[in-house]
Image (cartoon, rainbow, N blue to C red; front, top):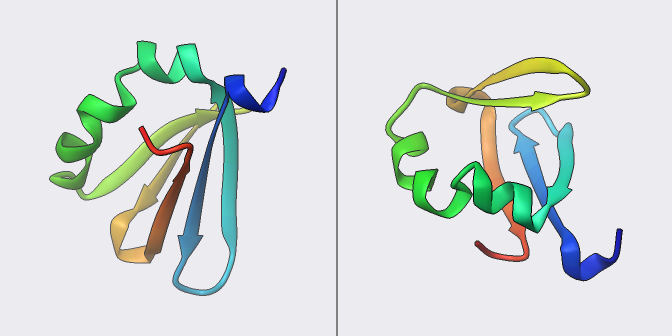
Length: 71
């Protein structure tokens, strides 16, 4: 996968750990990343699938989130 086709999200937690996951840009568009950002911020936690597992990260544990490239 080339860097032009990758979409990377870094979730920086308040205690210093960073969760990183990558997907294809086309897959990110299919799940509506750009459109759902505002909806996601109105929830209490961030949910995503990583390695076949559902991961829920409470926003109270998140320092900041980076998207590369920006959606």
